[in-house]
Image (tube, rainbow, N blue to C red; front, side):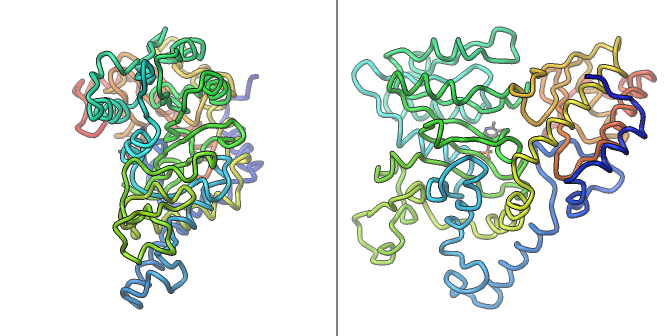
Length: 425
Ligand SMILES: Cc1ncc(COP(=O)(O)O)c(C=O)c1O
């Protein structure tokens, strides 16, 4: 498909966009085109408002804020779980908002990894986010097993993507657990979760997914697919703020299991304050909470999830696909012969919410982009991630960002910068 490559056409796409009205609900950094919502989503007026409401409840009610006020804190994690459930295709009690991505992976591995007989290995992949690999290795060590032998990191054929065939081939009768990403954090490849889950289930292996790069960008059907568990952060596409509390999903077929890592918030809430030393775990995903919820870091998510409920994830995905398709088309048209390649799969059903642009000068190009008011994100050694976000990026901004990039390349502006990444890339 080919588009006219003019600014007027981009403006026309914005006029036709049914979600365009949400843009004014976000605090857009002044003078910037923000294409980094897949690292940290922007603040919305509604997220700010729900945070302020929760702060007020602390000011007004002190300890009673646990049970009174607009958003009583004691059930807030459950309430947010309910609101998150449609984004992952789950029933409300299969989701809880708790912990961080990495902590939730620890919790779920501690719960679902049960090495027995010759089934002792964990399947992951060599392109996984490092924190996931660190967590899985440390869980293996806690079982007295050597990660060198027991963590299978399935290889990529091209250094960017994974082949579902290879992942399935790794699911042998020595495997006790599979943990994979939904969308790869660098290339943006969207894996076929349904197929992978079916393969794992046929072989009797529990399977979990890291949804950090798909939650809020892509619809999921975790329950219908039969996924055992999933975990994610809420600070990327879900715009809950830096370090915002994360989420997890546990399929209801596992309700009643003892959490691998227990704490008093794993408890059935009716008996939690009996203060018994015998834990009665909640009979829903809430059992995988550990300690007191971080209320102030949960609060922005209330306002943010209201926006998702209103706009609908299908509609957001549809716009996100149009934005990334438009961006790829613009890159193809304006930046040919400048040394760029597109690293993400281009098919709609195989790409996530960002475009992965590869260039040997990526680090210096990112610095030049920032200097010119475009906020990208660099992943070593040569990847520029560009994420136009359905809620707040306009087609005209995408058009403009590509013009700026073209000028940087034509004028070799990147040569002014040091070829070294920042501490936070
Ligand atoms: C794919 C993926 N997994 C795991 C993490 C780790 O998340 P956290 O630091 O919130 O535990 C991240 C963080 O960006 C991520 O992108």
